[in-house]
View 1 (cartoon, rainbow, N blue to C red):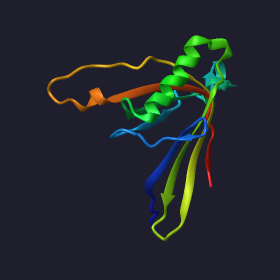
View 2 (cartoon, rainbow, N blue to C red):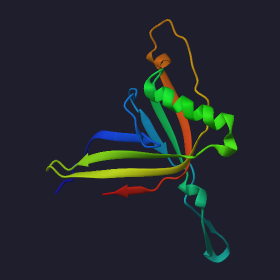
View 3 (spheres, rainbow, N blue to C red):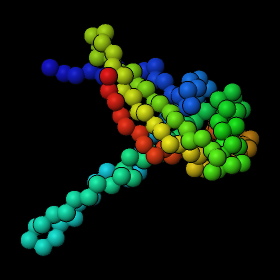
Length: 151
């Protein structure tokens, strides 16, 4: 018997704000840049295993419409981080994917992110040949923890 996954109607929130001004293509991209464990094998095939706590970190890239309400919201958070890094309240976020099975059942595939900071400034460009990328703000964030829950 085959398995079906129907994706759609994803929800993205940062600091309890639901984002609606998302851009095209991959409007949100969550990656885990670090391994969660390391293995080293030595003489006689002896193996050593080590938990890598930094494997819990995620990088989160969000593409929003430049100058939109969501862009202004994030810009305000970034300004707060830059003005007082030590006093900045770390961000929390959720990425919720809705998954249908084709039989009317829907599951939520949720990434629960905490301990977030901005890691890059917002780049910009001016283009006279109609490049739509000039109207998008690309936000780069890193979160210290991002477990995945399927319910």
